[in-house]
Length: 260
Ligand SMILES: [Zn+2]
Image (cartoon, rainbow, N blue to C red; front, side, top):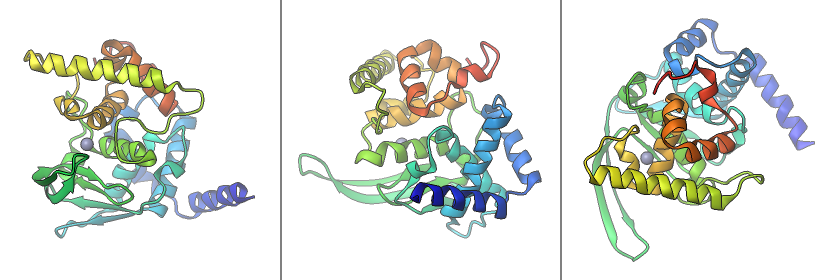
């Protein structure tokens, strides 16, 4: 009954709060990683994006005016992660805060050993447990880059990771997935990346991935959607696990070899 009501309500929002066609087409065209989507997938993405925009508040900081196009640009990318999942994966938080550019993180936290750390650094994005997602608009706009960098996918991957507690690189897996296979694939790839960086080698993904298992999952998620062939070729087991989790196979969307 509750599910039926939710479905009815979502349909109602989709019908009554449509995204303007011109804005939708403009944003779709800007994001090259959406080019291979089928018509039914685009329709589903538009449904999630519309409901997402109804459910979440997207507010500008430091005087930034957030236009409808900017709202769609953020929401559409956030909804790519849950295209074959459900919007409920983004439950229990409400707000996205958008800064014009990088912003300063300034806080303290206590680690597992009881040691207090002071954080003071510039960031392009941040996700808070049960709190807002914070984004730099300058970085959201940086959509065509070689490394597959995508701050929206990165921060929303953290949100999925946080569904089962603090971000640790393992979101709640589906029943048909084996947590040991997930852990083995990610641990091996993480260690391989750390070793490559130690040797001074270049990575096919953003080297920020080597910061922690949580960052590794977020960076791998960015590349999985934006340059899937690279992940499929260099990290096939990680690709397989991400494909099972997101229930998508983005490498199938382009002719072989694109984005390597
Ligand atoms: Zn991160």
